[in-house]
Image 1 (cartoon, rainbow, N blue to C red):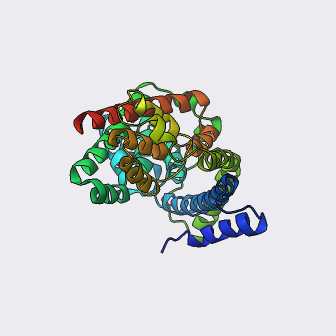
Image 2 (cartoon, rainbow, N blue to C red):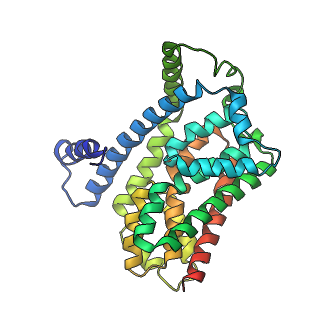
Amino acid sequence: MNIFFPVKILADWFTFQVFRIPRGTLAGEAVNFFIFDTVKIFLLLLAIIFAVSIIRSFLPPERVRSILLSKNKYTGNVLAALLGIITPFCTCSAIPLFLGFVEAGVPLGVTFSFLVASPMINEVALILLLGMFGWKIALIYIGSGLLIAIISGVIIGSLKVENLLEEFVLQSRIGVSYFGSKLSWPERMAYAKSYTGDILKKVWPYVLVGIGVGAWIHGYVPANFLVKYAGAGKWYAVPLATLIGIPLYSNAAGIIPLVSALTEKGVSLGTVLAFMMAVTGLSLPEFMILRRVMKTKLILLFAGIVGVGIIFTGYFFNLILK
């Protein structure tokens, strides 16, 4: 049973009973999506930020750094990307752990490798792709996602752009040295509650704006839009699919059924996977939250590097699967 089924019931009740918007209408679809995703994302944020905060209270920053840092400067990016695969977070809920890495003193490039890999590739996506398209497609997808995450992190790390983080993120690196000490459970719970509240207070307007834009697109952009304008044989299909995917929000498991439907309608698999990667790895709600912790220039840099990697992957898939 879907753990968010009660949220779906709540969204349906508000949309069709309280607001009395007719079922099957564009407005109904948009409002229902907005209510459902707003409640779902905030529940995820609340649960995961709190859980990560508890975990962080057991880990001294030195331990985190020692795991992700190595004499080989690229090993940290590889380890962070691999960690991203085994942590089933969507973009919005991966950001608290990203913040935890930064606050622990982990290099920015390494944290970005995690931020890219966590929502884009996970075991659920691997299993679903394996079932629908076979092991070859699944493994190539996982490999390309890992490569994008590692290379993106290496490039951002080499540019030395820590100055593009917001001041409160840099300041939060100070005063976390007590983590890992023998705190009592009430102290850990109090810290987690305080940290969760602080983060939610900072990001909630950005989350709402991002979900609102995604809801509008979900309700008012026709389902066959991608099929019409990014169908097989069009040279611009891959970058267009990538751009279309950015305003949407979903995790890999949620978007894969659409991947199957689009391929059945004739859209090239590389184009569809570029769309999927953009939805999961470059979502607008993610940018809205990241804007609170980093400056616009760094967000654009991040989006540009990852976007180029996604487009390359889409063309590569279309080339080898002809």
